[in-house]
Image (cartoon, rainbow, N blue to C red; front, top):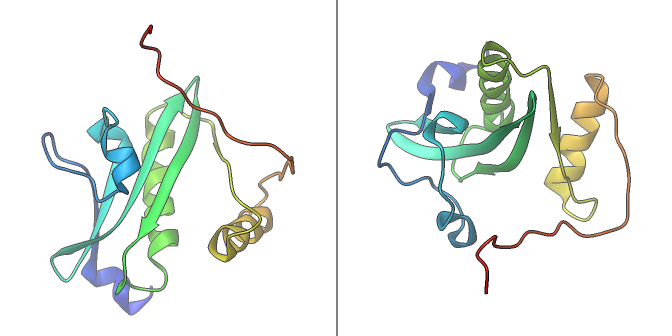
Length: 132
């Protein structure tokens, strides 16, 4: 156990609580059951936003806010994966950039733990379902 684990508390977002996400994601209707926050020394220092899609835990955003423990992303992901398994998910997936050092590092860690990497060239697209 790393010393910082004892001081880190990971929990789901509470109803009505704002997630510590970038402003582009704050307009989403966030399901508290699929948003985890990490507290360290009584302040929020990280968060994971995910979704269940047909038994696949889709990781939409992983955020660590300095100063936070260096192992915070791994602590968050362990808790997310435990909870997702309990909720019926059998695998996880995410889109990672090969231009962001932190995401390249996460891809390496994922591959070491048996995840499959599917490189592609393209763009992730999202749009409103509101008819215009």
